[in-house]
Image (tube, rainbow, N blue to C red; front, side, top):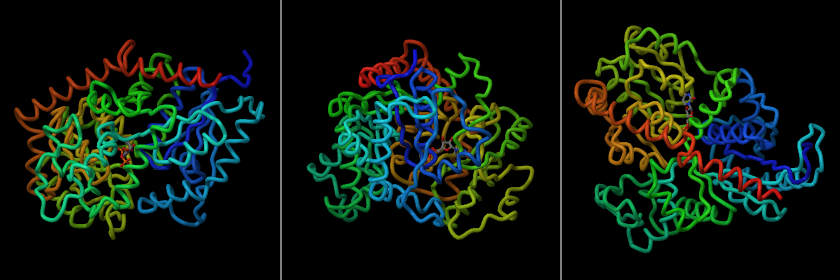
Length: 480
Ligand code: UDP
């Protein structure tokens, strides 16, 4: 049937950094494979990087790509340190531009490429202004929060923590004390497991506390909240979030759903495109092929975490001293004040491993040679490791990473959490615990069991599978 103004057409707007982009691009692809028209709207800079780094953008008939300026001067480098500026600029400077674009796309009966007018928006939850824009032009809008449900629930509890007197922390408090203001986590969530900026907050007026609290509550103004998680992982947090935001879809891990869709449809181009913003070094897979099973420690801290030189040295010597083989992702902008030189790339002795700038991470984690993942506990990395059954050694930095790492060690029991102690001795000790003897076997068994449970939830009839189909049906009914 030819498209008409009621044909569901979703416009998806991701936050312009690797983690959220991966999540939302996977959702875009899944919705398009499922028969909905989808426009993925990126910033010009992200779109350009995507085109340059990827072999090709996915060629799915119902998926198209558009881009807009982010409002910052063209010549400003969009590196790790500028992410916040880009988001602020989009929220403020690009509002008018977005308004005009959305209105045109809503009113356009048929655009030249045969796509119908847009009927629904899915925007990153960090863009609250999008919810208002959608309301102004009378389009239903869904909010997608790409970090974990447990972190979303902690942010929603900021008012309760303030009311309880558990926030701000005050001088000299014991960071190991368990907090009571996040229902469902009273038994294990310590102050040090809350997002790191909670520690710096001096009053209820702290700008970051206020921002997170407001942005999180804003999701309840949207028609629904999408979370890239599975109930089997975070049922308590999802349950509590639903009490405040009843229409909440827990439909992850999206990368695993997409992989199973692709293999069910025998998509031949499945591996030829990625959503990477960096050029992937696929040679590392050949190196992994030469290694024995579970013998390599994979180290990656995501797309925008940076290390001080001291942290870099402690990690470096801890890894070397463990004596295990290492595959280490060190982005060129990753170590503060240290240039990306051949010297750094060759810092690891040849026989002990490789330092490279960017990997095809999902494939690395799926490789039989990888025995453990030293991670910053970003949510996408955590989910990717869980799905592949790879135990994690967590070195969290900020935002949801502190709470994710607590879930890894205390709730799912698939790894260890270094948290605030970052020295070479602890790195070495923990790497050995993750890689050697009975403790390693125990972690691997728990990780495999968790992977099985998550895979069950995305298979036909599982909870994430049902939630994904509920989302599709709801988008269709919003489009009428
Ligand atoms: N990633 C990758 N190659 C790398 C390092 C990371 O493809 O060498 C991907 C990883 O698979 C994940 C994303 O980058 O999907 C990082 O997202 P995450 O939420 O873990 O961390 P963030 O970058 O948002 O801190």
